[in-house]
Amino acid sequence: MSFDKRQVVYQIYPKSFKDTTGNGIGDLRGIIEKLPYLAELGVDVIWLNPFYPSPQRDNGYDVSDYQAVNPLFGTMADFEELSRQAKDYGIEIMLDMVLNHCSTDHEWFQKALAGDRFYQEFFILRDEPTNWQSKFGGNAWAPFGTTGKYYLHLFDKTQADLNWRNPHVREELFKVVNFWRSKGVKGFRFDVINLIGKDEVLKDNADFDGKPEYTDRPVNHTYLQMLNKATFGQDEDGITVGEMSFTDIPNCVQYSNPSSHELDMVFNFHHLKVDYDNGQKWTRKPFDFIELKKLFHTWGEGMSQGSGWNALFWNNHDQPRALNRFIDVEKFRNEGATMLAASIHLSRGTPYIYMGEEIGMLDPDYDSMADYTDVESLNAYQELLASGKPQDEAFAIIKAKSRDNSRTPMQWDSSRNAGFSKAVPWLKVGKTYAEINVEKEKTGKIFPFYQKLIRLRKTLPIIAEGTYRAAYQESDRVYAFERLHGSDRLLVVNNFFAQEVTIKLSAAYQDGEILLSNYAKQPLDKELTLKPYQTLAILAKKP
Ligand code: TEU
Image 1 (cartoon, rainbow, N blue to C red):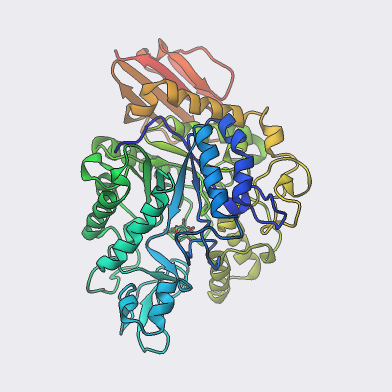
Image 2 (tube, protein in one colour):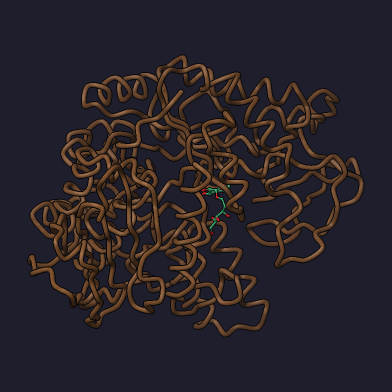
């Protein structure tokens, strides 16, 4: 099994992509309708966030039936149609597999609760809770009915962690993956998959700033090897990615090095915590550029040297829009969006585009807490108030950090509801949709730049295959790296600030050619002045 390194993945949040039924919720038919758009952009794979039956307490990450389509989003026939039509456009589908936990509405949990011993073994039940914190706030244990026992939920209390130590659980979950494989699905994204391997004896977390006791345990690798062997490892081609919470480089090398037979690639989140104060999400702080650079360099080089593979991304359905976090969008939205894009699309790994990123969508700029729906945000707001924060400060934090920021309806055009739906959308449309939408941006600066990046990856092996080496490490303005392949070398320099900056250029690159820039072409000389948020890629021969 090997995946194609020239591929680019596009992430679709089905609930917010395109509504064709007029219920204010996006659906599978909406994705079918927009396939020509995705083909025009040039992406190879579409990752769909969960659309399975679910009480939607965590927008589908609380699955109550793994082998069906939630009527909110359509039918199994719609999915099959989508899969068929996507293939005609040369697009593969990647499904989101939420195998760490299931909804407490799932029949396994319901049977367990009713006293069925076999299904009780499916969950992690203990007489005494540990001090583990739920990632959505509060303790990670909840009373299991009236049994006096507690069940583990690392996320919401309606998301019960599954007991992977139990072979019957693994067998059931492997069946789920094989069910979708039998429908021709070849791509899988595994939700928080480095949390599945819990110890037999659960211990308190010694230190909340350290690595949680249930993360990246050695047995986690064993389970992934079993999953691989029993399911997607049998496919000739395909693509798999694991979402890794709070992980490190040695584990990620092992998860993604082909010789371990686990996964093709991994997501990690360290670079998206550089604007957390003291590592805490519900705070506000300008991003720490030096820290960001350091992370990109150590991960880039570490994964390159260990033959691991990164999934590269700035945005997803859990993150506020990167433009709002890293760029002065009032003045430099186009420059900032294209620079951020190049800084990962030219790097080593597989780039992921989150819907709307290719048109430079921004956070919605909501005015009131009533506009937010996400369970994590609502809990966090209450916790901020309880900790003594005044309402306006708590609101400002939610506004900057809420996951709803990225989940707003896709902005197709300037008509009502941004062309997303004829009905009132389930989540309010962002304020800027009249100016920022697909119709306008197709001939703007950002969309064509993404098209170009995607094309370049397909034509130049150095982008898809080259190794990674840090460059200009001493600069406090520029994030730069080199890619090396055969006798070629590629330098990518990115100015992360709204001011110009001058750097020195080595002789080899002075003789090189500019492959890409988000400004008009400039002569290459000993000194190079980069404009605000400029990105520049120079291709040269090794000296
Ligand atoms: O998210 C995993 C995760 O660790 C989250 O806590 C993430 O860091 C957080 O949302 C950012 O604030 C995955 C899914 O991507 C997310 O949508 C789900 O809610 C979560 O798992 C539970 O399934």
